[in-house]
Length: 149
Image (cartoon, rainbow, N blue to C red):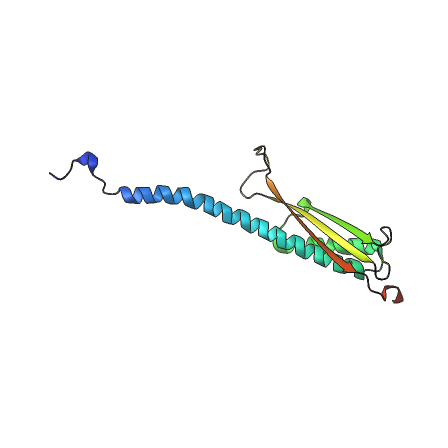
């Protein structure tokens, strides 16, 4: 006789394929989701910083520039689906830190985003980071004709 019932391997290949496939496929799908969320936030932060710096230097005054930068930030983040509560915006001016709108002055806008890892509830504590920090900055020069408007 060729074999007994206990040594029969018929049908075990599909079971092994399903088990190994699930063990490999689930982490791969999670990795794709996580990298997609991080890339989306990186694009949002970079675009938001660049656009916020542009609208800030074109504004009539520093308060108007700050408001325009906030609107540009919210719009860029909404385009990429990033929550505005996880974002910090800072604006620095040089050569005079207290006067942003001076001819040929430089304005640097920095955007910091914390991207939560997908599929993890916010109440879960692992002792490690549950979010990935993303930082972007952009610098624009105020026009040399700024005060001539």
